Image (cartoon, rainbow, N blue to C red; front, side, top):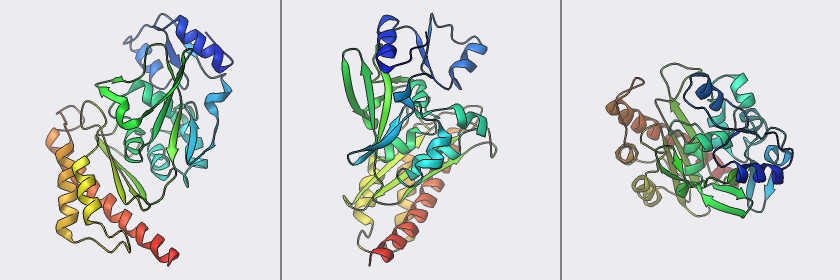
Amino acid sequence: MRPSTLVEALEARSAHPDGVPIMGGTDVMVEMNFDKRRPSALIDLTRVPELTEWGVDGDHTRLGAGVPYTRIIEHLSGSAPALAKASRSVASPQIRNRGTVGGNLGGASPAGESHPPLLATDAVIELASVRGTRRVRARDFYLSFRTTALREDELITAVLLPRAPGPQQFAKIGTRNAMVIAVTSFSLALDAERRAVGTGIGSAGPTPLRSEAAEEFLEAEFDWEDGRPLAEPVVRRFGELVAAAARPIDDQRGTAEYRRHALSVMARRALSWSVTDYRKGATRCA
């Protein structure tokens, strides 16, 4: 099926709840080629213009679910820096030209690059059906392994990205530098206005995760006025709390022990980068 409007797409989804929506096809086609999936129908969304648009929506940037990673890198590095950094780490230019955040969310692999930034920045996911539209926080979207709050007659239509009132970081470790699935990944966001911290952990549990303990710890320890460098024990403790939130397994890409270690290191580095960026911002505002 090839709907050309969002209304047609929602009607097709309602009529074929067992059908598989496809946009970039970077995950779906691989599964079909390896005979891991044989859907009764494909709902091709590439002709639906509403899904490929982005723009300001109040205090958020509304990112259409079909906007490819390349466009995010080119146009949203300022308004959504963590997601743009994650997008740069996705596979090859060819995949970045086709792959989308909507597809990442629909597949719900815990290794998906976009999940940690969406969690760290408290993004909101827009879900639509013929019954109407609803919005779900990313923190409530991931239910269990490859299971999300998306209902069988719904499509992911957009992601609402809060503006960035502070530094945002993304880090990823893989078995090589390019074209690789993450061994684990981490995102950090500092909200200078609310004096809040957001974290996101990828490929270290059955779902993307947060470390609420690390967030609360850093919120209390961070110098929100001037962004002074943190004492080494504070930085180390932040890394430990991030690692403790993970629920990794041993697999062909890495052991659970290594994933925890890597998360601790990435968390410390992301915090160091963020403190530096925060101080630069504080200096400009002084």
